[in-house]
Image 1 (cartoon, rainbow, N blue to C red):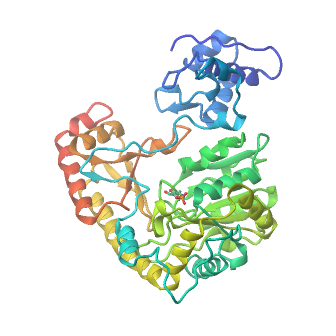
Image 2: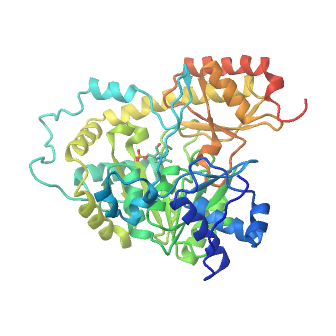
Image 3: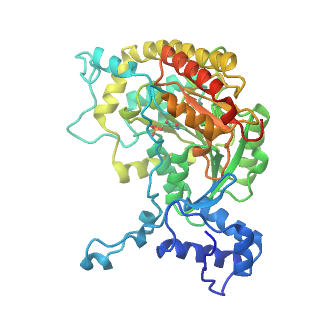
Length: 484
Ligand SMILES: Cc1ncc(COP(=O)(O)O)c(C=O)c1O
C-alpha cells in the first residue's frame, strides 16, 4: 500500500495519536485483513512524524494482534476489531458487545491442516491414548473405589483424592513443591491461563512472554486489554536481560521452550527469579510436556527453586494423556490460592466430576504410570529417529537445536536456503512441516522449522524425512536464497 491517511487528533503524545489513527482505520473498515501497511519511511514523511513514532505505534498494534510483521516484507493487517462488521439487521445495529469481545482474535490460532501423507504437526499425541481409554474402559468406575458424586456439585478446586495423586506425581517427576492443598484443577492450560489473566492482568498492566511462543497465551492475555511484550528466545531460552521494567507477569516454558524446544539455562533461571523478586512480578511456568525425555531427566521445574512465591506452575494432561480429555491444573502460591479458587467457582463451578473420576481411576489403578512409561519409550524412539535422520540426511539444509524432552524439536534452516521454498517442496511431496515464524507475533524465528512427532510413528518419520531428502536434493538450486 502506498498511502494511508490517518487522523491525528492533535491531543496527547504523538505516538498515541498515530496508534489511535491506525486503530480507527482498522475499526472503520478502511483496512482489511491481509492488507499491507505503507513502508514506515514514506509513511512517516507523509504524516510528518518520525519513523520511531511509526515504529512504536505499530509495535503496540503488533503486540495487540491487529497487525503483524512479515520478515523482509513489511507490516500487514492481521485482524480487525469486531465492531466494524456489518450488523445482522437494522434493529440490532444499536446492540453493543463488550470491549472484551472486541479483543477476541477474528481467527483463533490453529495451524493450517495439511493434506499430506506424513505430518509433523506439533500439538498432537499418539493415538495410543485413545486405545488405552477403550481397552481399560476408563470411564467405567470400578466397584472397589467410590466415584466423586455426580448428583451434586463438588469443590471448585477439584476432587481432593485426585489433587493428592497429582501432587505426589508432580513432587516425584517434576520436583514441584506442593501438596494437594496447593492445586486447583482446571479444564486445561487454556482455562488456567484464562483464570490467571483475569486475576493478574488488565488494561494498565504489561505482560511479557516468549516470542516465538505459545500463541494461546498471547491471545488470552490480549483479552484482558494488557500490553503484550514479546521477548526474544535463543539457544539458552528466554532472554532475561530483555525483560522490560514494570511488567505484572511473564509467561515462559523453561524446561522445553515452545516451540523451539530449548531449555532455560541455570544462569538465566537464577536471573529470572531474582528479577521477579526484585521487581515484583509473577512468573507463569507452563511445564507442558517434560515427562517425555531421552537420557537424563529434564531439569527440575522453575517453581522448585523459587523461594519467593513468584512462580505459578501450570500442568496439563493434554500430552501425558490426550488433548481432548480437557484436564489441567494450577499449582498456586499461597497468596493466590483462595482468589483462584473463587474465580474458578464463579466462572465454571468445577471441572467435570466425570473427567476427574476417570483420571483418578487411571492413576489409582497404576494404568497412568504404565501408559506414561510405554509412551516415554515410544516417544524416545521417535525423537531419536527424527534427530538422527535430520543429522544424517538433511544436514545440508537443517541444523536441529539441542533438546532432550517433549514432543517436538526445532531445526534452524542453514544460511543460504529459503524456508518458504523448503516448505513448498515438502508440501508438494506430501510431507507437512511447519514454520517457526507462525509462532511469533514479532516476525522472529523466520529461519526455524518445527517438527512435531507426537502423532508421527517411527516409520512415518523415516519415510517423511527420506522424501524430503530426495526432493530437496533434486530441487537444491531452487532452494537457495541468493546466487548459487
Ligand atoms: C505450550 C503449551 N502449553 C500447554 C498446552 C496444553 O494446553 P491445554 O491443557 O489447554 O490443552 C499445549 C498444548 O499443545 C502447549 O503447546
